[in-house]
Amino acid sequence: MKKHLFLLYAFYATFLVASPTFAENPFATPPPAPASINIYDWYNLGEYLEASSQLNFNFSVADQMDDTYKHVYDLMVKAHVSDGTINAFKQWYVVLRALPWDKAWNTWTKEQQNAWRNSPLPGAWYKGVAENASHAVESMFFYWLGEHTLAVAWAVPYYLSQGWTKDATDEIVSAAKDFAYFSTNADYNPVFSALTPDVQKAITFIASAKKKVAIVGGDPFQKSTGLSSDDIAKIVDVAKAIRAAAQANQLTQ
Image (cartoon, rainbow, N blue to C red):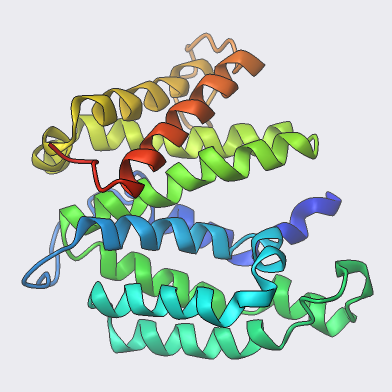
């Protein structure tokens, strides 16, 4: 096992299962959506849930963990997530908050490390938020836009700094697959068309990375060149531009 796998929860597959490109038809019978949807609440939830799955993020916010996760809680309330999702978050936060974030990882007990690596509680929380996001096309779109954008803009540079090139590429490919779906699937067309031209171009640019990487189960005849360091740097910069637009509440026209 690669030594850096502890950085992510064991339930990372939850992201993949809930991802819009994983489900054959995620909008076949959607539950009723809230009366109003704040796209920035959902975008920010996507960013925060991606960050919360990273060990280094939780170490970095240790001194203000309660304030940080209170903000996440408030976002969930504003986004009208279900009581079950809120309860799943509360159950996980009790465990998360009790971990020794003021101590180095290699000093944690085996039980503490296992609580981070293997607890089913965060998986239930992540799954709940993703399912709630799927109640409407808009919330689904912006939740995953936030999750993937932070992964590419923030996690990928960190992975590269640690020499984890494959993990960086995997994050980009995951984003590229969903971004290609966002920009071409008819279900998302009204949402995608409402974005500013610059954000549309940024999403399309990241989606184009899919053509350079061989994808499991994809076109067996596709000639894949792989992503160069220059390709990755440009993709990271484009993701940072999407983040900047989101932070300025300027994703849409």
